[in-house]
Figure 1: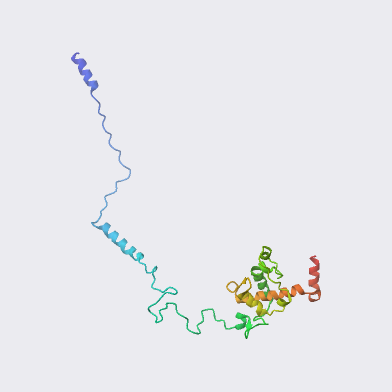
Figure 2: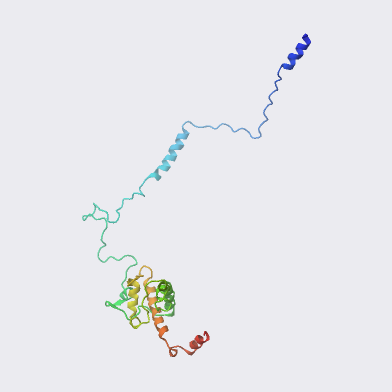
Length: 227
């Protein structure tokens, strides 16, 4: 091989190294290095610990109190639950009106109402009766409510002689304390609403035994018009 040919071969075999282009300048200036004080991270950690530590106390969870029927070393009898002093009356429980709160006078069922029987009282009594009483006693008090139709024991009709002659205090006490399979409604119906129901039961007594002579001509005409 001639010298000229050899030089051409050597030049062709030599690798060509491309120059690396310079990086383009960034549009956002570089953030200057932050100055971190020695131990500043520990200071922040300790501050966070100081503020968080009170939340770890159990004072609200484990309160220094006595639970019901627990023993107590403070009182001589060793009981934590204390008997209220004689004559103590709970707030809102001063029941000084015997007739209003018990339906009795000198221990006997009252023949009187403790409040005036007004149209407003009867309307309230009808509303409460329909809610609490009609499921068993039905809407007119014959004892054939929807509960009875589903198989429960039938209560007596309000229109039998014994219950028609029962005093208002008797009904009030039955509503309060219950009777037979009927549970008491003292926790569900306040005293004034119980008397309203009793007044409405009296209205049912009159409605189921009334005659045309007890009704005005205008009311008779209105009833006849619906037939």
